[in-house]
Amino acid sequence: MPGIHTLSDRDFLSAFKVMDRIIQNSAPLFVLVWAGAIVLLLAAAFMNIGALDGMPKLLLIAAVVAYLLGFQLPTFVVNVPLNNALQAANLDALDAGGLGQARTAFEPRWVFWNTFRTIVGTLTTLALLVVISSF
Image 1 (cartoon, rainbow, N blue to C red):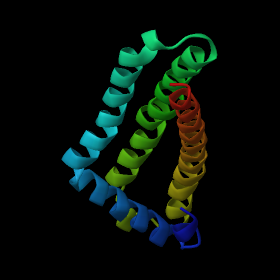
Image 2: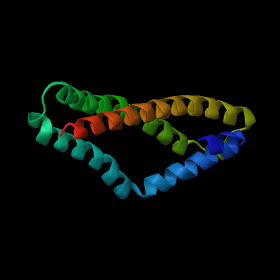
Image 3: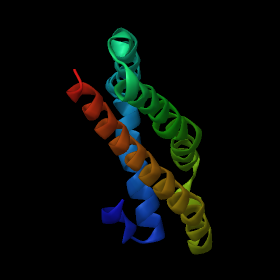
Image 4: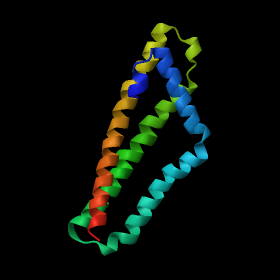
């Protein structure tokens, strides 16, 4: 986002639509990676929870919950709907004021939740690395 943040409203919205469209056109691969991360994390946690005690066990549970609620849930509830709304927008039909409103309705919220997801994802990864080191 820092790279396209400096663009005009029309160019920013258009650039994001193009990036999102490429992701959506690669949907099977993207969904496989996205859903695969959820499935593999849950499978690894289920298979290893019994081998852990104390803090590593609590950290594993916390990491799984944080990943599902703090990373995946905002993706489904906020970012994807924002992406879909932008995909549905006819940018050519908007004047400068409409483009500014569309960007204001999209960018700050999308960036906030993407940053939130990034922080949660990083903390989850660090927690899982600590758990792995306890084996």
